[in-house]
View 1: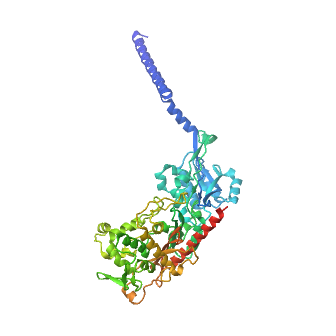
View 2: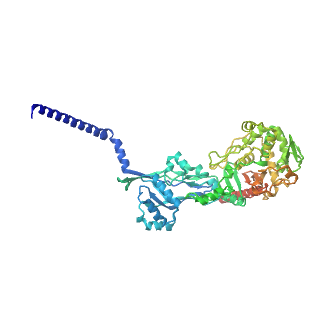
Length: 603
């Protein structure tokens, strides 16, 4: 080998050695970076690949009435569970299951969708509330169903069924929108409150999730459980409702196509009964209601899913005459002796406003007791809409009453400014006259009407309705009304029920010491034409159901020591009589139960 060739060889060997050394340095540097500098990060990743977690569902808190009666409880159930890392032959497994238990095509499709979305050790409930026969069939064929097992769980039950369903609500799987708003709700099997108390107290009832940690192999198969953090049971809730009174009120109203009633304890605002009929069975929902049952509820013309006591907005009719009278007395427009001549109608401009009959000279007490429209037409023109709206709102109209309660609505109290902005028209005297008899633009919910009566009968205190609380008497702020004026109205309410001329006399409580007081009302859903009036057709019972007047009654009992305030609305009853009778029966039951409770608690 020549000298030149040796030099070239050595040069190439040196370059190759330098290159090899550089590669070794880069490799060592990379190993240092991965193992020393980034070691903790990759250690965490390795642990995450080795350890998988599965959520443990908490037991939902139970709901009790004021006497400890269970309204919503948990019962042990068996459920069919799929661990979604067991994906092999899932379609075939579902077909096998369909031969063992009742499994609809809809349930199979939902399972397949869940398998596509989930990963790891998420568990999906294929079917809940299995029967013993279904459990036995699955256990017998367990070897043929890898990744599918029967677990012990709980199912929500409502022992009172339709009684109180609107107030209680129900639980069900969260919707896609709810899952988007709260990632925790994507956990399979989690149920949330969908209405009523279940939704109102959902975060307290739901409890706190636990989890199990499992060691898994490279194929994500479970090797062993390494740790467990137990879930925490949800809080038990005790509400103000009286389950016995609720059931009685539900039964009393069940004979009507569509009706609602609410009873409030005047001493503290406790809601003792809240009924809306027709009702529904909340037990249909926790395990998943069928399409047929859901459509039947939605297509029912009497809207059984609507809580009419809280979301039904009705023209309050003559029940607001109590508030008009208070506004007139407080503003000095009238006193207890002021009289108005009722000839059966008045003219406002060219429009004729009618009264139910010719009353002759009437004062405020007689006007309330006999429901003379003309009296209120005349005095409200002097009171004015500003003062009237102020009293309406102060006594609870347009207030709603239960902030944040699901699906509750507020009534409406019109003002001059509202009409100018929304209707692009000035307020008129005719508008004020309409508002004085609870027609026109005025709307109220049954809860608002019950609160208004409770504030009147409670001595003008700003009582606030409540669903939870223990105090027997709550100190409410004074509203500043003259006690003498309040007493004039309360006495007139007693006359409306307990004197022969009163509009509610036929439905009075005849038991001494338990008498009720109140005010009747009807609200038109269709105007009576002049032609119909001339033909003597001032009643609507001959019309189809949906065109008849709503029946209303607001009142309290007992007269001498007010304890219970009530509002009843019976849709399209055609006259106030049915509402009076329903209120009488409910208030009698409330007083009977009070006496029974006192006897039970007496040593």
